[in-house]
Amino acid sequence: MAWLARLISVLMLLGVTGFCVFGFLATFEPLPATTQWTWRAIYSVVGIASLAGVAVSLRGSRDRDLGS
Image 1 (tube, rainbow, N blue to C red):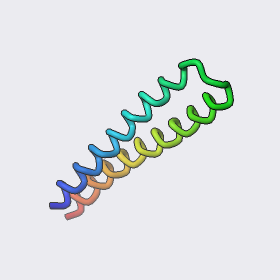
Image 2: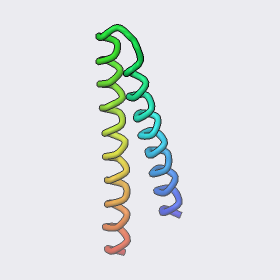
Image 3: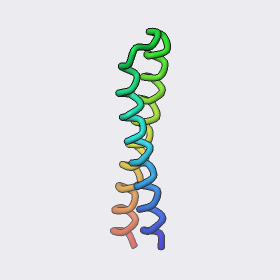
Image 4: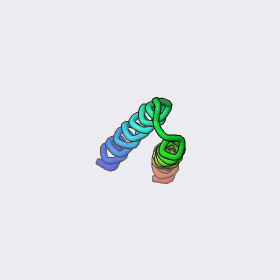
């Protein structure tokens, strides 16, 4: 059952990452410069954090499966 929860969390984090990619690309539309850079920073930080969460979740699953 733990693998199902891990799979769901990885899929949700990948969805957040995809949203951040599209949001980052949307900041290239005409907006005030400060607004563009603010949203780019937010989308970048959240996207990288969700990718790190995916990596930790996948790495953690292998370590736990090998140890059990």
